[in-house]
Image (cartoon, rainbow, N blue to C red):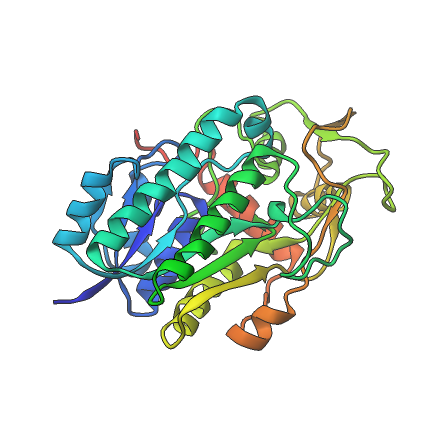
Length: 341
């Protein structure tokens, strides 16, 4: 029987791009997603790009019995775990939802994996696990002290996954700490979309650029940075997807828990990002400076040297590429994925 990679949250933004990368690299995949913030239309887009429609199960990962059934039906040998809520601001407003969903779904997944004796897991973690007082660039050993509930869920999940190694030596775990994913598939067929008003910067910025939203709010211009706005390490989602494949290859011959930063190692301020979008689209963005947002850190830049040394992975695409591909996605899909969820 063919071996499968289970992709949880595989119709989401990063999950769908990684699903394409897996299929193009010759892997068989099966996707689980509850479509909470994505669309089934993604499956047909994946088929357009790769020529393959992956098996799909609509389910919440907290439904452990359904996850068990997927493992029984498909010969799954490894899991890439993307499923989870992901907006910092929303997590501050509704922390209980984040703890219940992100941690609960992961514990359910672990239970099902252990029952099926599947021990290879790559987890979609985040740079938000690092301390807000730590100095950039962040190394994997940098102090962990999340300042928002979203980051705390990632940190607690990392701790639980690391504990697995102590109880079962066969586990092979990759903890991929993303910095700030942007961009879209170069075809314009896959991109970042939201149900309702976007929570993340780039999709919100794209909707302002296209006239769907009136203005962009920039949360604070009084930070201790060159232009007063927060600085982030933005990484193209296509580079991020390649990082997952490199991690999966690395884990084939190694047990234990391994953490890697996936970023470019370069910082870009919010204002610089807006100005790059303006250059790409050819006209100014309507923007407004407002007060700082709770839960934001001043600067977050990766030290990605460990990923290069161990995974032979390096981000290759630029801020210009991210903005161009995001705008191409927005122009082709002004209303996101057209089909119903």
